[in-house]
Length: 418
Ligand SMILES: Nc1ncnc2c1ncn2[C@@H]1O[C@H](COP(=O)(O)OP(=O)(O)O)[C@@H](O)[C@H]1O
Ligand SMILES: N[C@@H](CC(=O)OP(=O)(O)O)C(=O)O
Image 1 (cartoon, rainbow, N blue to C red):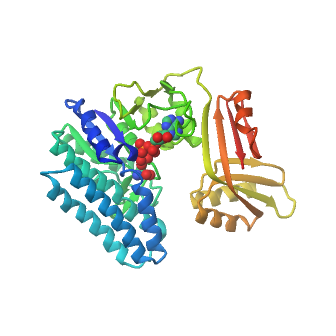
Image 2: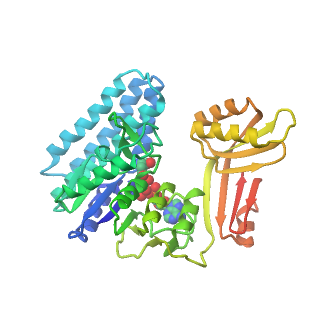
Image 3: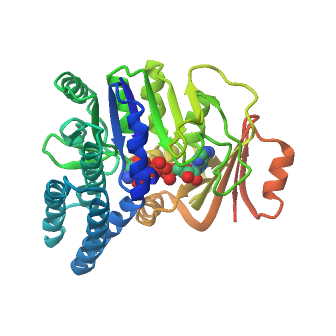
């Protein structure tokens, strides 16, 4: 059994979806689980629908959703001939589910509605692609992953119930004759059938969960890049391909914010020693990157830039040390708000946290933290991380920047700048 994952970038046009068919035809005789994300930037668009709905702008939410609907229907029309009507019917069921919800007034928490609306992106994309592949001779079985991936109700960052999910996954594979099972990444459901999501860009993780449970031979993430590069090639055209990487290196890269693989993906694979391939779906003959248990030496400097960062300055209110007590209270607040700081620097009577700029979370944290600290917030910053840095590169990358904070170990340097 192999697990494949195609991300939003691989399914963002009719041509790209047709390309998936060519890739899968080459694996016709293999058992595959194929995980697919929402098309292109659909998840962002669905986030906007949820925001409008939650802010009481029902008409705007419905209008925004209508655009998403039409885009998917147009894609289905281009791709399908004989299967269009059946696909249309299934798409309509998904549309209706969301529209019903949008007609209601929000009475529950925002994150709950977010998951009920946003999960639709993956359901729509997989529905269209499954019908298309069946029509094009790549027989597959479409599965609603919400029947398989059971989670808790920690909406937007749901945690997997491994026992239930393992049983259902094994049962699914045993009962299915098709070589290809095609399903959604990123989403799951609670024991009360509420939809959940696993955190943005979580489809890589879904694939790793299946790979782990099924002791897969390998997992392959198909991307619009050659493989894992030493920097985002969109920002750094000279970025180098890294043909092999260790699990340790990739988990560090993901932790520091490299967009290329979701941070939670590595553990399920590492635990079972399952190799992860990152390959280019535009040219399957390219070798890509293999990530495995082997130690890999002599890596080039790896550059990661995170934009839209906020620096929260916390200062002791009465000149007492920032000791264990205020620190543990602060960590409790971070845990409750589900916030992961990207960098923490402590001093005698102050500490500084670098965070992603999620307005509502920052406001809540600032409000809670102000009970024990004086709080100041600085916005519009960027966080540069270089693994395996050289002094020359560090100088080159920071010489024209206003450095706000710096943290350095022999392996990694992090610079927060304006
Ligand atoms: N180190 C890196 N190596 C390769 N690609 C990277 C890296 N860092 C960022 N990227 C970006 O990741 C993009 C693919 O990620 P994304 O658009 O989220 O893909 P998908 O939709 O397939 O998950 C690439 O187009 C590339 O610009
Ligand atoms: N569609 C979700 C899940 C995902 O993993 O997407 P992608 O594979 O395109 O990063 C998101 O955009 O967050």
